Length: 325
Image 1 (tube, helix red, strand yellow):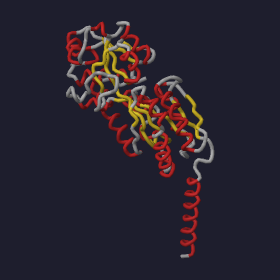
Image 2 (cartoon, one colour):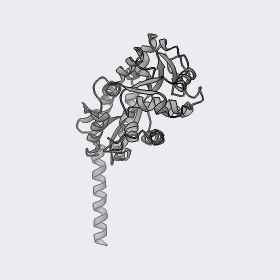
Image 3 (cartoon, helix red, strand yellow):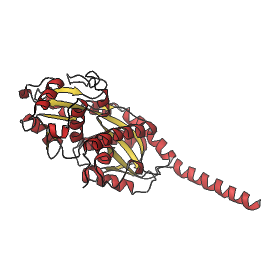
Image 4 (tube, one colour):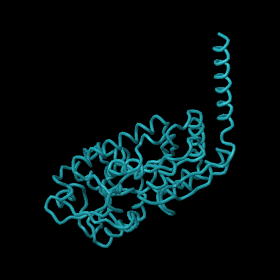
């Protein structure tokens, strides 16, 4: 009995010590890994929220771009970090929905991370050049079925790649991988330029990447994938076109730690992100780029990401798009 009491007392002390330790978190700077290069959507989102988030955290945030393998290199750096909340990841749709669905040899799965939130949604828009003469999705699909249509992307296995294929598939195009020619480019900017100069017929990408071209009349939007219309885009939603399944097709940015991140740490991140995303400067900056600020709880974020992954993976398996390398 005495040994049992001593053991119980020891367990209680250990529990109280652990609780006290988490109550003090964070007591030093936090490493924030951005798995894509400077100037991209993830980098802009991360650095835009850095100031209000750092103020809420009360410790410096060390922003570090660790690039390579479509976001996988930076993701692995966080996957292998100690789950103590001092190394966190700005995860993105490409690194944690598209990559797991497309790449057979990816060195991580969704279960290797604990998401504390998704805070930004990027609508996907499909667009063409005015010179194409295409004004609606029906006209685009009709041309695809006749042949000779191409689409651009930021590379094989990218969100832009799977987006165009998913749209064609949802609109009833048989064998979408063969029905339209994929023209991969080196980055999203080059992909948009390919449509501007006539190298490709259409593109489906984040609305933020197309906003300036649409505003200047250089590109014509045909559809947006969010349930609500997108400001600046005079185009119907996917639901209005009878394709509500395409509402899964959105970009997003979230924050994750390694698997095993304690509940106490995740809870603190939820409170910090609420404060940061309420910041007026951050909101106006991101909304001016076409982003939708939508703060998700850890549970909602995980459910959202897994649902999108399953949708993408089902399409990849159906069409044989899995990348082995």
